[in-house]
Amino acid sequence: MKINPTEALQKLAKHDGPFKTLFNHGTLEVEIYKPEKVDLQQPHTRDEVYVVISGTGEFLNGEVRTTFGPGDFLFVPAGVVHRFENFTDDFSTWVLFYGPEGGEQP
Image (cartoon, rainbow, N blue to C red; front, side, top):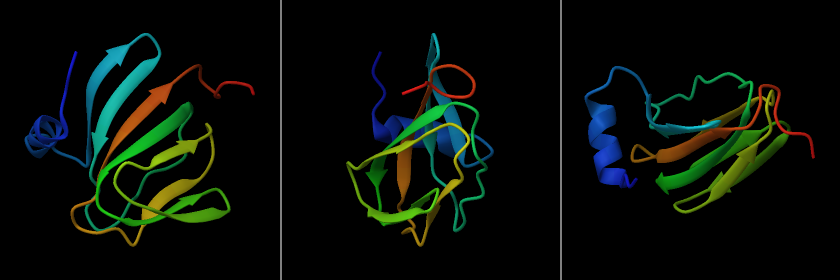
């Protein structure tokens, strides 16, 4: 299985909404995400990883705010408030959900 960012963004452009699921296997779900101007997502019920494809901005993860850029890996535990802010128009990211509802225990 291989999906490159260009193909993923083309699939997303044909879809209504800022994200598109591209792959599922077991508990793993892979999406492409490209919000327009504002990130409106809510906390999720499973652990989540982002790998930034393009663009820059700030990421709020619970009480922690950090900058991000292409290639950055961002982890969000299940149930934690998070969002991308002040991001450039070219921002897009891979999203990987995995594990059980409620997240994995450390």
